[in-house]
Length: 354
Image (cartoon, rainbow, N blue to C red; front, side, top):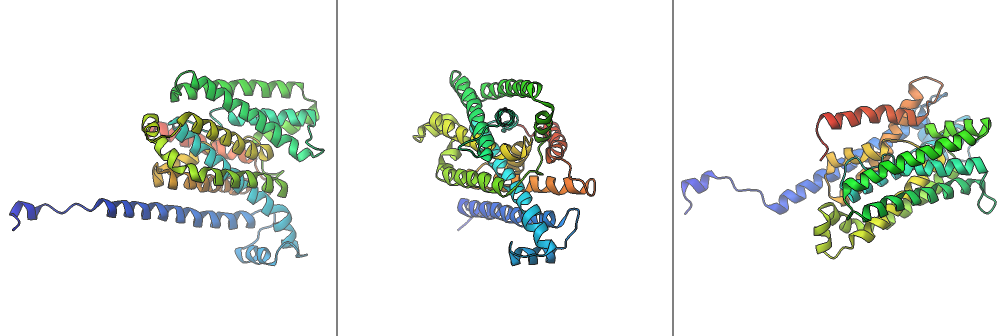
């Protein structure tokens, strides 16, 4: 027979039930983000010099690229490549930022703040200056050059950190050194460039979707899909690593090799994104933070959410860039910086940095 005190104490919910409810909440946030992303895509396709309503956009998409109407030309030849490139680039930067923050256990880590974007930008600028082609294809020269320099930057960060037992603070400082180094090299390339090439490089460094094409969709899209497929089996190891090196090593995970592989993957994702639209800051920083606030640190939910959130934030920035000055598309890199700076200040003021 239970005592009065035992009857007064409510039974605590079972751990399994709490865990199931937590996962349902996470899936709810992911579903809502997916719905918001679809709505923003529809809006982005409909907004421009010639406005289209949702039914026109859906009908044009349904009829396919073979239509001969004005709407078909606008959607399939102009806006859809731009919107899809925006989604792929945002998702790539979101995933790369999420991975870097997990690997370095630091909320300031992102391809932009660690200098990987600057390194990729330098490689792309060199390709523009030299007119580099791969097997006679000019569109391959910039991505390959960007990947080589971004991979060199991640190797530099990795080996500097390796000498200090992968101390996250040392890795961040190494990233800042790499950032200033490649920014200086970018300035040198601009100084050496002819006025025509300099104009091209400077406009590209703003970060703009105006040169997006179906080629950028396919190249950056293949890199993103490959990265997602490669990361999927590593989810459990990354979750263990987020709990600390010692705990991950006690589970048999070779943390050093895992970091090196993931660093290379981040450099590939960044190169694929930067090669076609220029350096776009803060997506790799903002998207992982928003994802962590919504679904927590569990990498099974966190990384997919960071990927989707990166696409959502950049799509929103694309929409804003069209609406600020009607008839003019402001370079999207300017919009993301204007959004990212106040967000970073908010994190600092609210003391959300661990």
